[in-house]
Amino acid sequence: MKKLIILCLCFITFYVMNHEVKGTTYHHFETIEVLDGKLLEDFTDKEYKSYYKEVDQRKFMGWRIHKVHTNEKVTFTSETLFSYYNDGYTPIDYSYKLSRKETSKFAVSATGSIGLTSAKDGKGFKNNLTGNLKLSVDYQEAKEDSETIDIKLKVDPGTQVDLYIYGEGKITNGVAARYVFFIRADRGGFEVFIVTTQYQRLEKRKI
Amino acid sequence: MKKILLYITLFLSFSLLIVIGLSMKEDKVSKILTVSTEYLYLYDDDHYMRFMFFVNVNHPITIKESYDDIYIHDELMHERMTLNIKGIEKSHEESYLNETYHAYEIITDIPYLGIDYKLNDAFITITLQNGDTYTLYLGHLSILKKTSSSSHINWTNLYGIKEDNEHLSRLRYIDLYFDILNEDILKIDIGSMHETSFLLYEDYLRITITEAPFLLYQCPLRIYYQNGDIDTIFTFTYLKDYEILKESGLLVHHGTLN
Image 1 (cartoon, chains in turn green, cyan):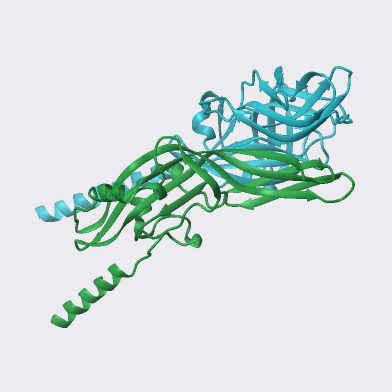
Image 2 (cartoon, helix red, strand yellow; image 1 turned 90 degrees about the vertical axis):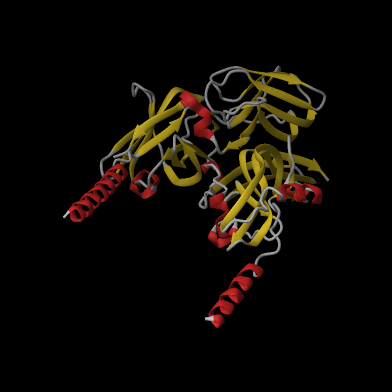
């Protein structure tokens, strides 16, 4: 019996210790700015300490969640979709067609020991934090999204053309802690971001 | 005996709940939605038109191979154009009235007409190979004919934005930066049924779409000069919204699928 208890304790300890250390940030976006609030990456240690107090009360099993910002408006600049440089001596009729699966409509980020699921399982948080956050359906990732860009323009010699995306979205972030038999297994910050409007901007410049 | 009755009652209640649940599931209506949109294009044999619709189920209408016929027309069928379908592309998902809708775009060739073509109330009728026919309201359709460009303007930067705090997917301003503009501009046409106005600054033009009753996210530009010359700028998609349905209110048109 003792052996069984020790084995169980070892298993729980291993389960609790074996977790992701760090999440990621939004690699799709070159800049992202919250109009009235803060991004998770800008939370200070002092703020974390204060927010953690809201989730530090132990529970038998599951997540305790404290949302700091809910559906705050954000603006962003996304990656450059294409750049083309005409290094010839005559103008070129340039056609650009792109059809790609899965837009950057939905992104998640985490700190501390909150893990992110792998891309093949769909973006989200490990251990069902995504479900526990009770986010509105708008935040559900559309895995088969596609995006098509179709542009045809004349590019003069010595001219570079860049197409990039910027826009607006909303963000929900905060801190969460997960408990297993009253033992804290994970604790950290979470953030969910969705794009609501995307603008395209086309620039031509002489080089 | 009482216990047996209790068990029977519990069993029957549970079965009834399951039956009710299943019947509610079966009653889910297959819906198709469109949103009144300004579909504005410049004729280009290398470009396509895209018409968006939303469905809440998997249905043959989302598969190109199921299509038998597709044409665009006005309400009274006085004008009708058969379209050459190139494909159907799945776009994004939206939640609307407690259901999840998948957005799709029907992609067709732009028909060559040789004239500026405008259809005030455009419908699209789709006949599937199983004989089912669906007629959907699109909004306004405009196809500007291609004209020879005079190159009086050399634009350097092109983008558009919505009105501040506008939730509808509706383009309001287009900013066109330039490094050369060597002729006076008379007017600018985006193919819309309505007028546009513009302000000329030192190095850019701000075009204001003064009236667009429907959604508007892409358009061409046709610039008319005082001397009679014309420049055109291709159909550019200025914005894409991901919450179209819940922001569009009365512009959403509901239909059912068989």
